[in-house]
Length: 612
Image (cartoon, rainbow, N blue to C red; front, side):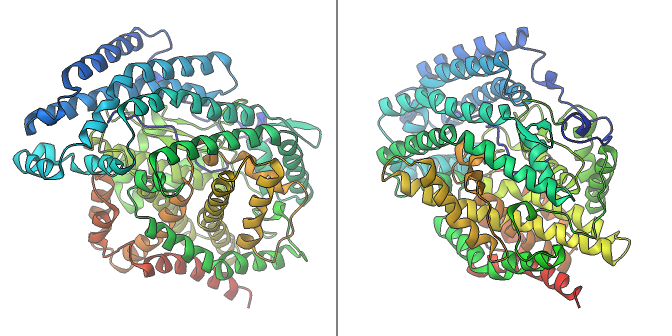
């Protein structure tokens, strides 16, 4: 059952902009202080923990392998607690190595340190593979009786239930050990992707930029700059497309082989199982979003086309600021105050939980050469704290990214009391607090808008964020579904993958757009396709869920905060149906997703009314 939290980069644009693609003063940007994990690569505590882990895993296997079916309720509880301790120590080691690597993925020493730690942890934990295999051989009736005998053991039922959901797809003990050992090979392809992306250089207007600063230009007020950035992205991605194609072909093929041996009915099955969500719920979400394309993205982008005064929009216009929008840079202190005020206004406890992220080195905000792109909140282990990575360039969207990742962080802090095995929230629910944090920040900014012009800019920005979270991510999901299906028929050329990408773009973005030559390669920089196949639908799930939650908050504010905190504290200890029941919501109801999507549609309605 051993597990430790993986680093999960998130699709968010976001060191000082003066050093990479800008000349504005953002103020002092925070950097991580990783000493709460270890003081360095040569820390004696790190060696101590590695030595402990090696012995603890060997002792665990010697004490329990082949014997799980002889344990009573108390014995099984003790066994699980020992496994949980192993997960904690391994998670601390890998969090430290992984976070250092994310700070500079082009540093060979950091890459080697991560690889060495990964190999050691993999080797040490290989003897534990038997644990989940033997757990899955226990009779359900026997487990039920043990839960009745020991309430503390019964607390672990949700995590055991999720493990046992893999029972139909379980291989022999020997093959499971083999796959465990081979995990470091698959991870090498992920690192190749990360290092390639982080090492790319883009030349725009005579300046050499990294990927974050170049993507940031796609939101510049100057259309010529946006076009130059988009074309340079296409040129550089095209130049490297064979590498990206090789990475995707290999990663998808590896997954297909493992899925085939396990007998999984679809490429998506593994993700649905890990998310503890029914396939029909995901398909209902996907179908509802695709059906809503005309009234959401198509309708909004037609509005934006008129605002920009264009006959057709290009990809570099998708996230362009409105003509009436001030070209302002939000310094770090203002961003902090904006998000903290929104959190504290909802509930003072939210502000108290968020404060240490800013004051104790839990955020790394600056754009730096070699730093991982995007943004994420990594929970580390339950007796330390999360760390947030941003690439902050002072755009209003970067403020929303801060609100988003801080929501993850608050969620992870609240769930930590569940312990290592139950704190980890399925991806579909993991996006709840992050998207809710964005919504709180947006609503506060909207309430404080100085005039109709500022209100329109804020509304348009929120609609675009929602479209990026819902429509764009479901288009990504459809692309992945097509990619995995096509790869099962044979090797895919870069042109094959390009065509799959373009097949979902026009459908999701609508008739307002034309697509430049080179845009067909833009699939290449999305990390989720390599790191976490089919992760992306979790964003749409989270946005729809939060829209429905926020509607409940507006309609019935009394007691909402307590129910909300209880939901976050539950971590992964409850199924989504159980978590949403106190709010009168049910994600298995087909009408649930329409409720969430209607909120986006109403915001577009308001924008259309402003045109009259």
